[in-house]
Length: 257
Length: 257
DNA sequence: CGACCTTTTGATTGGCGTCAAAATCTGTGG
DNA sequence: CCACAGATTTTGACGCCAATCAAAAGGTCG
Image 1 (tube, rainbow over the protein chains, first blue to last red):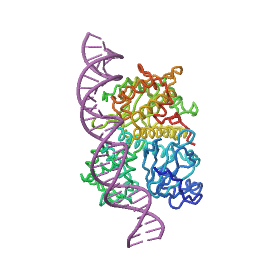
Image 2: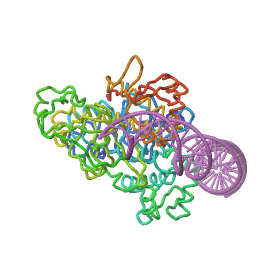
Image 3: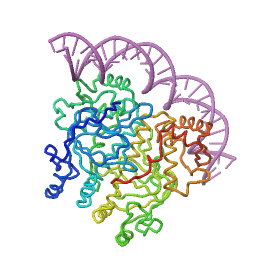
Image 4: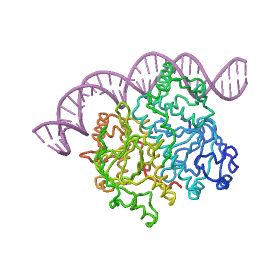
């Protein structure tokens, strides 16, 4: 529920060494020479500390962002102080694009851990899309994938019980981390680094931290999962998938055509 | 909950007289001559009766669709027979595009009323996008708007009580109908034609039809709304908006750049 | 008119929220 | 390295919102 002032240590107009633009999936397949002018032009790199906001409700966004390292969330708060996490953002994900009317976003974005974000101007993206249509196609693909995720969450939040919601979220995050943060995935253990608090799990599923705790305890004592010091290990994926009505194909990206 | 066989009365390969392609918002601004070859090529028109499915979970979609008339829904069902309505589809909306992995959709689409749908081939759309980049941009815009809607629903479903969820849904649909089906809107009455059952409202909000009924009764006796024979009239929009934490700007489309 | 769908109402139950407090973990400064 | 404040997890008792079960009353359509 932190409403900290933005604590961005920004380093504008420096060439982005850590996050070469080529790594951004929406630029896959574009000739290097085309990218070069962009590479050194109006591209920023941002470092965040945990809990800092990248942007907040009602901001006018002049940039779009890709996360290169760390966890972030998109969220929204109700008048009575409850928070809904709309989406967990992992490295490779693209955010800040969907602005509603008059260019203002209807949600906030914050870092869950220290994070490294790459920003570049909206107008540049627009330019890029007209010069290089495949950028637009990639963007469409990303958005389609996001929509698919939102649909699954809506289903989860609307029509499953607490166990189903939590199991679904755990499995989704587990596999997304596995794919998008291979270094956080321990294959031998079948575990991931998992810096998400129980309160955050609650804010994402629409449950209270207290109830999340009870369900997690149960999953642990049933030996479905194991979680100690910010790591999550899946012990009985079959059972969890069953409870969650989850399958990995739900979160993998697919071709549109 | 109907799992009827598909009852599509399809009229393939006929020129589409009723729904000129120009009316599809993603083709706005494209010179007529460019559209002509498309107009008469591989474009279908489909008539649906209420409750028929346009496509179902796991289908491979070779077409994308725009609704020209009538109400439709996108939905998904759980193993235990509960249904979640993911999205109400009104004239002008674009569906069938987001296919997940291996081209199979993760949801079903069905008509709520008799409906008129225009279909055209995915591959054609792809072609179109490369020839005419503005098609891609429009598509991105549409998808962004959809994402925004999904986010609001997630918030609603996850963090509001029954009154808030229902009030939000009523207001959203009311204003979308006002914009997208002006003929269904009675300005004098401030009412719309509203062919949605209480069970469907429940399936969209994650509530039971019984509880939806109780809340609606309360809204009616408080004189916030009036609903008789498939029409919905808003009597106290301020109060409803307050309960729902809704504002019209949430559902209007805006520029992306 | 009769089958079926939708709405309505009542009685009862239960899952999850709320409140509260203790236990544990984490980081920070002396 | 310890002390201490703040965050997070854990547990228990209790209450309430919405689900469930059941049945009647309207509506709709062939």
